[in-house]
Length: 149
Image (cartoon, rainbow, N blue to C red; front, side):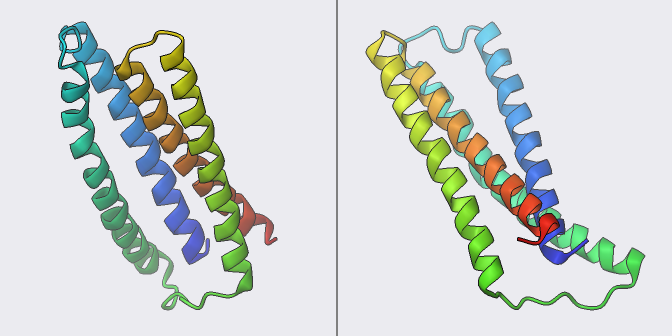
């Protein structure tokens, strides 16, 4: 498993864990009636504002720990950090996946709001479109590195 593969695996796992946590937390908060008042979007934002930096920190820490453990257990040498044209191509593919998901999520949110949905629904559509875009980008990079093109 290459250095890029290990980083993508950690990012995929953190993304899935974070999305699962947000879904469970939203269901829990909704069942408790925390989204019933006029400040529903504020309550949602206070929950999400902590999820994003924690997931970024978890990805960084997870990547470092996983790479250290990988080096210890496999005895592999220090990974190469050289970026070539192939790496840039894979990154462009991943960015395209993020942009497509974010764009579709935004348009879907606008349509949902135009059809009478609440702002909370609109924000959730945008959030999960971004999460899906991040997951898709990681999957695109993982598959591209595994295929080699």
